[in-house]
Image (cartoon, rainbow, N blue to C red):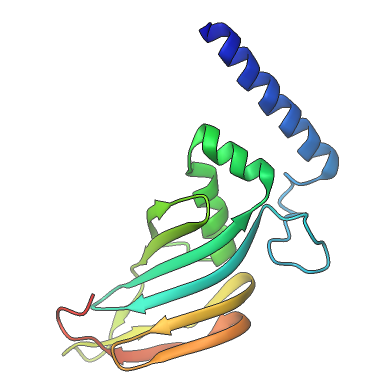
Length: 164
């Protein structure tokens, strides 16, 4: 019974991988993410990013849509390849992944810098690897919303000790 299950999973994976190679969906050069020139050819489409800034770190909540093949692979093999795709798409190389699901993920950014001490912090400027429809940055003082953006400018904020 176990051999039959392993054989079935192997065949399904081989068929899916073969279809992706024929269509070019596996190649990093053809992954378009939110690129409107190649509709449906990307593996992931980022819907929104919310960054909550706190004391010395920031929490990133991202929502996305997956095409059928990555969704199937996520269900079968887990989240490691999906984590890599999300990290590459968002361009956060030093983030810690807290959770990854089929439609959303949560990351912790550690590159928030202390400015002059006393609870002042700096979230550095950032460039995403794709166009993001909605990006919201929440600090204790304000909420900044960007629409259809690939770049964020740096932002300074004050975070009381127990904010995040």
